[in-house]
Image 1: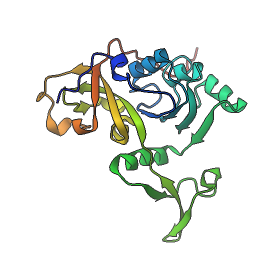
Image 2: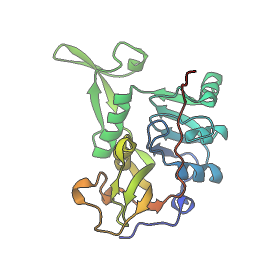
Image 3: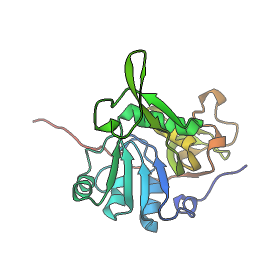
Image 4: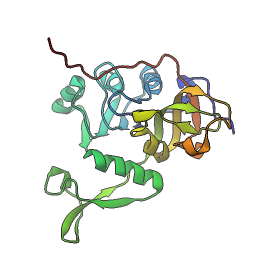
Length: 230
């Protein structure tokens, strides 16, 4: 089945207000930047976004925050975005912070069809409020629920018409589990190769998890922040 679409705009044609979206990437590495810009241009609002972080001002999810397109953010690290901070402190944005490992496992569990699991991270902190606590082998654990989304946006290095994907180096990060946890998964790739060219043992995400794929152009390599010395 050929899953190739022309571009990001065509890929997100049925994304509507008020839905939940997962987005791959770590910092600005491996983010689905073309899909994000397409949502920005489309003006979709009241989104719940699940991602490791919220981008930076003017890039990644920072774009959607500029236009108040995100109502709720489920994330792990959000320290590089001043607009995110402003909206959080002013009460304009609902935020659910997770320990990074817990967030990764909630996404992985959602893709694997596991509804919930117990984890020790967060016990004895605000993270534990309202959650079931059980003891295993003398240690306290929190019940965490799996995460899924209406749409999942991922960015890969190579893909084919069937939707098989290979991520490059650390750009794998959250992309691989997120690709499994969306009802509709959209992949943007640097290169689309003929079916059969990808080495089966090297494929990170099998095409069964991907519904649409397109080739992005002019991917930008940005750094979150730089530290220099004289």
